[in-house]
Length: 125
Image (cartoon, helix red, strand yellow):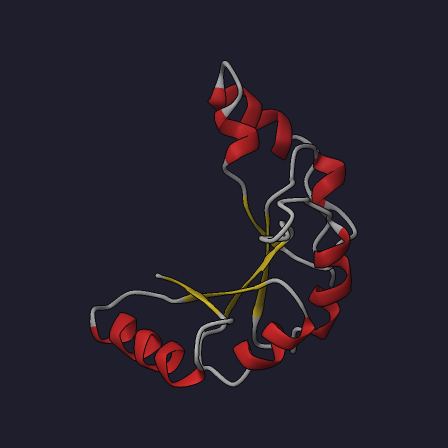
């Protein structure tokens, strides 16, 4: 279940509890520092950092680069949107990624996925 951190705190907590009740994980999606602060008040370890500005629909990987270092240990920063190449995955502070559109636009999704993962992102020791 994806929960936007911009929703009212009590609703977000209720959705998170409902997801747990049904055996689901909740991914709390953030777009900026204020939303990240709200997301950190929830229990879910999964924090999706969406690189797409929902007002302008512009995408910048700087969003992940800025917010991922603020995600505390024990939580998982997941970079979302605007990821097309192995270089996009490296050096942004996230170790998990949600990739959809860039793969779905490819003629061969399996090959595009292999290409994207061919140069693995180093995992810090």
